Amino acid sequence: MRLTLIAASLLSVLSIAPAFAEDAPAAEPAALTGNMTLTSEYLYRGIAQSNNRPALQGGFDYALPAGFYIGNWNSSISWIGDAGLGASSGLEMDFYGGYKQSFGDFSFDVGTLYYYYPGNYPAGWKDVYDNPSTLEVYGSVGYKWISLKYSRAMQNLFGNQGSKGSGYYEANATVDVGGGFNLIAHAGHQQVKKNYNAAYSDYKLGVTKDVGFATVGLAYSFTTAHKEFYTNSVNSDTGKGRFVVNVTKTF
Picture 1 (tube, rainbow, N blue to C red):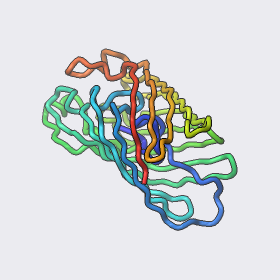
Picture 2 (picture 1 turned 30 degrees about the vertical axis):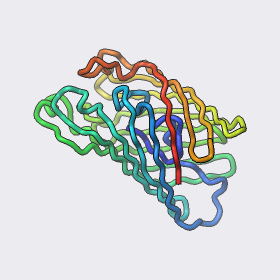
Picture 3 (picture 1 turned 135 degrees about the horizontal axis):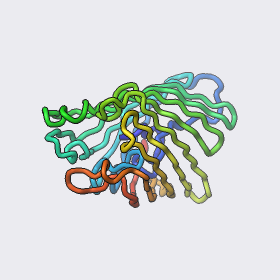
C-alpha cells in the first residue's frame, strides 16, 4: 500500500507526495513521467507488505495543465496471502488523481486514491475481512521542505470491517544537504475506527542519494503497531522496526 510514488522516495512508501512546481503561473503542457523501484521490502505506513522479501514497483504520472494530475502505481505484495485465510493476491494497483498548486514557498494538494488488489477471496477470508480494495481522499499543505497530510478512508480500510472513515495523519520533511544527498523524516498515525488494536503510529528516518542514473535510498522504519494484531500466519511481525534499501529510476 502507498499513497503514490508521485515523487521518488527512499522507501517504497516513505513519502508519497506529489512534486510541486516552484510557482503557479500560466498552465504548462501536459507531461508524462514514469518510475521504477526495486526495494528490499515494501513498507506501507510502516507495515510490511512483502514479508521480508524484495518488491518490484512502478507506475506513471500524467501532469495535466493548470495543476491537475492522474496516475497509476503498482507493487508486488504478499500480505493478503500471508494472512492465512485462503485468499491470494500478489499485486497492488493504485489509481489516483487530484489537483496541486504552489504559491511561493507554500503548496497544497487534494485528490483521491483507489487501492485495488486483484485476486481470489474465498469464504474463509470473507468471514473475517471485507474486500481489501479501498478508496481514500487526501489533502496536504506544505511549506518549503515540510508538509502535513491527511487521508480518509471512504470504504472499510483494507478489509477491516466497520472501519469506514478511518484516517491517517502524517508529517514529512525532505532536506537537501548538498552533493545529491537528501535527509528524509516521517511521522504518521493510523487511526482505525472500531478497532483499537489496529491503530498505531509509524516513524521513518533516512537518506537518499542521486547517483545520476537513479536515486538510492536507505532508511530505518519503526512503529507502535500491536504485535498481536500485525503478526501474520507465518509468524512475522509486520510492524517491527527494520532497515529498507531501494533504488528508484524516473524517466
